[in-house]
Amino acid sequence: MTENLKPDQIIPGDCLKVLAQLPENSVDMVFADPPYNLQLSQDLWRPNRTRVEAVEDAWDKFTSFEEYDDFTSGWLSACRRVLKDEGTLWVIGTYHNIYRVGAILQDLGFWILNDIVFIKTNPMPNFHGVRFTNSHETLLWAQKKKGAKYTFNHHAMKALNDDLQMRSDWLLPICTGKERIKTNGMKAHSTQKPEALLYRVLLSSTNPGDTVLDPFFGSGTTGAVAKKLGRHFIGIERDEGYLKIARERIESIETAPEQVLKTPNPRQQKRIPFGTLLEAGLLQPGQRLYFVRNGITAIILADGHIQSGELAGSIHAVAKSLSNGAPANGWDCWFFIDESGSKVSIDQLRQQIRTETG
Image (cartoon, rainbow, N blue to C red; front, side, top):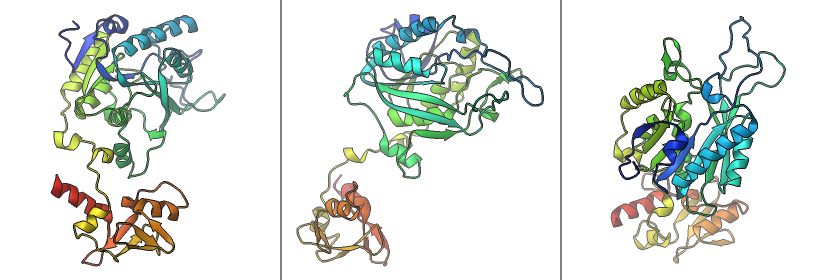
């Protein structure tokens, strides 16, 4: 099986047995939505006296914390073996289990990079009124080896968030409506995750062509989003009903065109010094630049530096000083007046040179 393993498939069976057969260091990322050990001590009833559906599936039943910890340690260890050294792992949970999972992650040598709070815009109320409504779940994002180079598409996340750095609190609706898969009018899977959540996870920490492993595949949300975004997937699922649902769901998904899947990283682009714009005649010594804050200007010096009042230096150094020492990228901070009289970012000239020089 290890020699003929192909991506984009759902493997039936127990995750521990299947993971033991997968090649070592073979996947780029793991996303895991494990059992939460979530049984309720008593029924919940809505104000209209209808019963709230709890997670009562056999796969979520454990006799003790020790049994759950052994189970968690087993599947995390197995995932660590198949994860590439530069790979990362995401795991989602609630207050019932996520703290135990986090401790075991650290004990096994994973290094936690972030915890993300998935804040539900439409949570289930606490009808007993004896404690706060539980309106979030927590995701832990960890790398296999501390200090290893890992994928984080920072600029893609900014673009997804109106060009603002994305925070660790994600306000998203739970899975409802047409997205919620049903069988005979009932939920097909009690803990189906919204595709919007997996969209952020995969876009942030994988690249097109990467392989994502989901050891608790369920209704196939990870595979559906992976296929949509041009990523490969390997799913493990032991429930025949879920297998059928996931396969049918993923077959209906179309992958986005290759040209729209790229997430350019400016750090990997060709470096263009500001002085190159002068040498190319796109800007002139003595020309005035306009800072992102109204009323502040600078003059371009012949050596490629700029001067604003008594401040002189690179476009980055002057921008930083004008921002009270806060980090500043000069390419984003300075503008010039073009022939039409419009203010234009100097970064457009940099991109022009990159295009012309290949």
